[in-house]
Amino acid sequence: QVQLVESGGGSVQPGGSLRLSCSASGFTFDYYAIGWLRQAPGKAREGISCISHSDGSTEYGDSVKGRFTISIDKTKNTVYLQMNALQPDDTAVYYCATDSWAMGNCGRWGRNDVTYDHWGRGTQVTVAS
Image 1 (cartoon, rainbow, N blue to C red):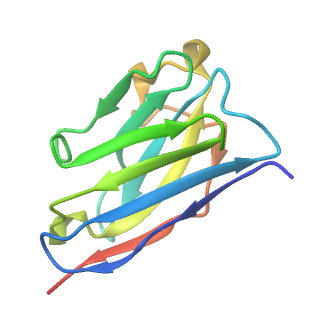
Image 2: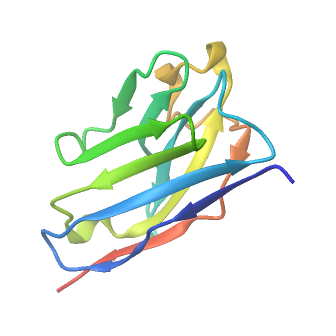
């Protein structure tokens, strides 16, 4: 069965950290860009980070630069998102997705016109005191 499975969400106080994981089953990340999008209630979906399987290049949204770090373990077919200095505005459902555009280039990550190849079901992240 082809699927992406996210884990690692939860509740944390402002300033805290979480690490999200995204594991693929039924396929491998070769030739994909893999990354994270989030959606908070009443807000537009936001592409926050992406990593290219082919060359390891990364992209970050302005709202998370310097706080979030994306990485990949190719042996485990898993992508991670280390989230530090979390703030209430980071509260959202976080989704893992893949994009095969341009052999897995992150160049269009987060654009509204992108149709992603795979989606996870999402994991809730809540930041509150």
